[in-house]
Length: 296
Image 1 (cartoon, rainbow, N blue to C red):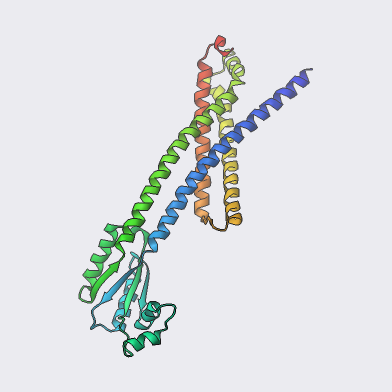
Image 2 (image 1 turned 90 degrees about the vertical axis):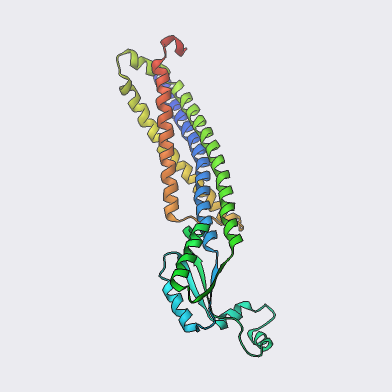
């Protein structure tokens, strides 16, 4: 009889532990989606910023070799991701329409190429702001002011790429804040329910002289294990979702670097451990302070 009761009790504890871990894992999975969105947004913003192109136009008296030398010097500047010398021949090839070739265009201008040699550049992400582009212009004018005729880039695109991502980041921040509040409430409630079944055990240990620290220690240790296991399961579900989206939907491609995956995994582990330990601490304090009659 006693063995049957003991077996039933152990089964109940395992079921409670598993249900708690699953509940926390689902919450961490949702938090992970938001964090992945933040990481993905940062990567997407960097790509969008570094797609901004600019052109350097030079005074007519400077020949292609002089401009090519400038292009080589600009490649060493830390503000540029890419610097390309565009010869007149390459410029006219890029200028021509799909139904025209370069010889037809040259024929219009009586065999003379009207397009001057230029330098095309792409700034690094951190410089794709109003302040950053002004700094680039100032450096270029300071170094090559006599040679330059114009520094040209799309100011409207510069404004849109920064404003659009600011608005989207603000929206994600609101969603993340609401989700974290809900997550803390759900995890706290889940752990409180799990400890409710052990309230008499906690009070019995306290009545026989066990200190609060001695009582807390095994529960906090278990909470940490729950946080780690939940973080691993949450990350596994997240990677499964990413894999499914990449392989099922052709229009969606989630490209995460190894460093991003490690950062996301570490974040879920830390969040999981912190939430479970803090929630367990406060739930334990409630039962440690409670009177015996209040437990019924």
